[in-house]
Length: 166
Image (tube, rainbow, N blue to C red; front, side):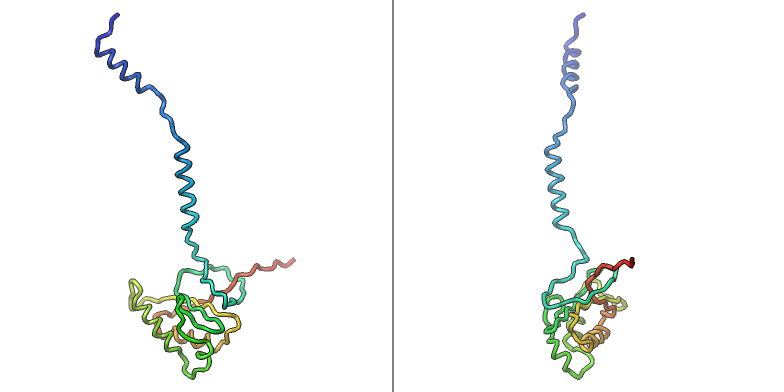
């Protein structure tokens, strides 16, 4: 039996599309490798505290990880807010006032510049104080924070492993 031209054309057309589709795994592996490297490099670890060689943090068995908040670093020499030196630790210790005016001004400025600044919003600040800094200095810094919108004060410590009782 002889096929018509249309039947031959349809058979030829269907014959072309009977091949099995292939998947190029090399390209997919390249994409996943690049994606993996991207995710590893851009891993946002909120538990990382600012590095300052002058500060030796006290040790604790605290379990809670720090969150991303404004940091005040207090070394034996300087008081630093987010990398900007605002006062000398010895001058803060020697002053008669109960608050540190430069810290109050800086925190009020940062509160006014932050996004979504509400009047009722309670802000948090973390103090990274060297273990050798006198309590009088830390007390003045905490009192200064209380005069600004940054009323939640947290302290950074180094986590040490708990010793198991045997």
